[in-house]
Amino acid sequence: MRYLIRRLVLFVAALLGLSLLVFVTLRILPGDVASVMAGTNATPARVAALRSQMGLDCSYPQQYADWLLDLMHGNMGVSAISGRSVSSQVGSHAAITMPLIVLSLIVALGVGVPLGCQAVLAANSRVRGVLHILAIVGGAVPALWGGLLLIMLFGRGVGLVGILPSQGFPDAGWRNPVAALASLILPAIATGLVAGAAIMRYTRACLISMEDSDAVAMAMACGMTRRQAMLGVGLRLSAAQLVSVAGLTFAQMVTGVMVVESLFNLPGLGAMLIGDVGNRDLVAVQSELFLLAAFFLLLGVLVDMLHHALDPRLGGQSEERG
Image (cartoon, rainbow, N blue to C red; front, top):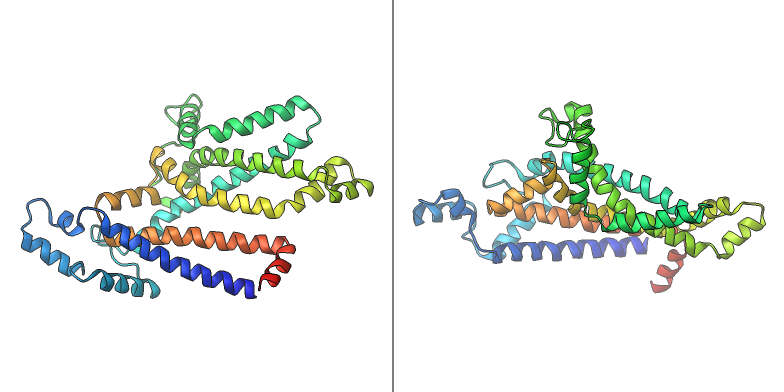
C-alpha cells in the first residue's frame, strides 16, 4: 500500500509538471489562434476582441490556473476552430486510434513471443539463425515502409492481391464493425510487425539468460523436457520483464500509429493533432497534448504495478526502502 501511495503521489506531481511544460511550450511558439480565426484581412480591433473572448488577454498565470481548474472538473475546453468540445473531439478520433493500437499490440505479441521462443528452442540451428536475422531486420524496417509494402501487396484496388481496404475509415464508423475492423487490419500489421520484432529479440534474450538457471535445471531434473522447462518455468520467470517491454512497446505505438494513420488516411488522433497544431487551436492542442502525456504516465504506473505484482521480490525491496 505504501508503494502504491508513493507511485500515485509521483504520478500527480508528474502530471502537474507536464501540464506546466505543455502550457509554457505552446505560449513560446509563434502565431496566434485569434489571428487565424479572424482571417488575414481582420482589423487589430477584431483580433483583440477575439483574444478577449477566448481569455488570451489575461496574464499567463491566470490562463494556466483557469485551464488547470477546468481540467480538474473534467472540462477540456472548446475548440476555437471547430466549436466542438475538446473531449468529444478527442473521443471520436480515439475511437479509431485506440483500437488500432490494441490490434497492433496483439499482432506484436502474437508474432514476437512465439517466434522469440522458437528462436531459442528450435532443434535446427539454421532455423534459429534465420529467426534471429528476421528479428534484427524486422526492427530495422520503418513501419511507414512496411505499410507501403502491405498496400502494394494487399491494398484493395492497387495491390497484387487486393483484398483489404487501404485508405480511409467507413463513414458509418463502428456502426459497421466489419468494415471498420477491415480498415484497421493493414495499419495494425504494419505497426505490429515492427514492434513484434523488438519483442521477439527481447523474448529470445530472456530465454537464453534462463537456459543455465537453477530453476530450469531443477525443472528438468524433475522430469520436464528442455522445451517444457523453458516454456513452463523460464518464460514464466521472465514474465515481469516481458510485461515491461510490452508496456514500453505499447507506449511507442501511440506515436508510431499516428504516423501510419497518415499513410492509410485514417482520421485518428494523429490527424486531429496535426490539424489543430496547423490551425494554432491553442485550447485544443494544450488539452490534447496533456491527455497524451497523462496516458503515457498512467501506462508507466500500470506497468510498474503489474511488474511489482509479478515479481514478489520487489515487494521486499520496496518495504526495505520504505
